[in-house]
Length: 64
Image 1 (spheres, rainbow, N blue to C red):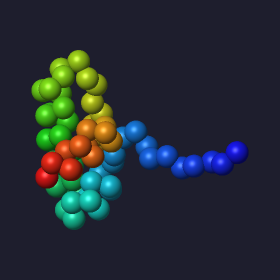
Image 2 (image 1 turned 135 degrees about the vertical axis):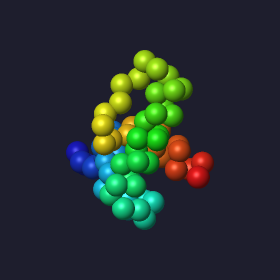
Image 3 (image 1 turned 45 degrees about the horizontal axis):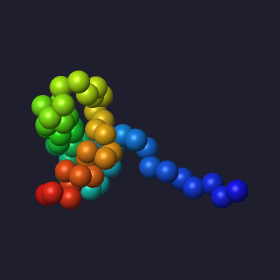
Image 4 (image 1 turned 30 degrees about the horizontal axis):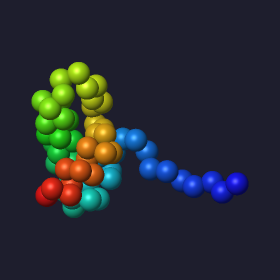
């Protein structure tokens, strides 16, 4: 049996900063903006402070 490492379900500020080349405070602002957009699209979704859903984040990064 082969064990593969999977990516976590949520993206944290460290990964956002590395992807965007921004400071930590700007990384949190990006996460907040994406969380607000995600919540506007579907108000029943739960969001976590300082983290964003990986699927939504990767989709948003591809648009930029």
